[in-house]
Length: 236
Image 1 (cartoon, helix red, strand yellow):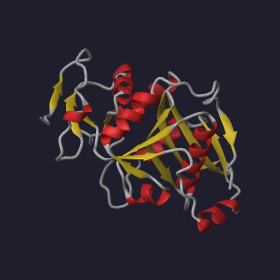
Image 2 (cartoon, helix red, strand yellow):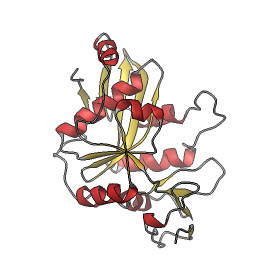
Image 3 (cartoon, helix red, strand yellow):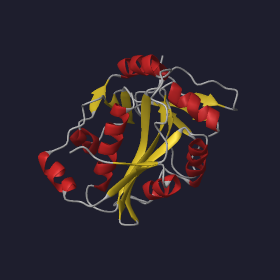
């Protein structure tokens, strides 16, 4: 039976994702904290936090799940042509806090953001621990786009992306996909499907199937040094 669970303290385990509500889709639990170990435990089970400022912490595991598999990213011919003309630089883990701050800025038509100061501090701590990572897109010395997420074995869990110039977030995502493929990752979790992800080649996968893949790959190992601060080049 689907039900909403309440988490009281750091010792409370997460319920099975299969118990998540159907409406709203994927809402599983409420409460708890954003301690690094709790966050890692959540992603290890296919669960992630998503809540508005001043709301309690909400934990989700939607069905279906938006995912990318190696080679599934779609680069339209027009996008490929556009990106080839740009003198942008793309880096890994050069400006994590700045990327999260960029993602936290309200989007057009939005009054606020779900990336609260509490979320920002929690993921910056995960970055300090070597578990959360960012891709940055630069125009000269100006940060014009990027994304961040965290790794769980051979799965990269994408959290958010932003752009200040047209297609800069797409450039960051293509860099993530190519980097993940080269370093032995098997799956990119994009959480909730939307038209933007669909245009990039995301697939909607039943939660049961997604969890089976997560369980298969979450204890795997990517190549050593995968997340050393570096500069990457798009293969277009």
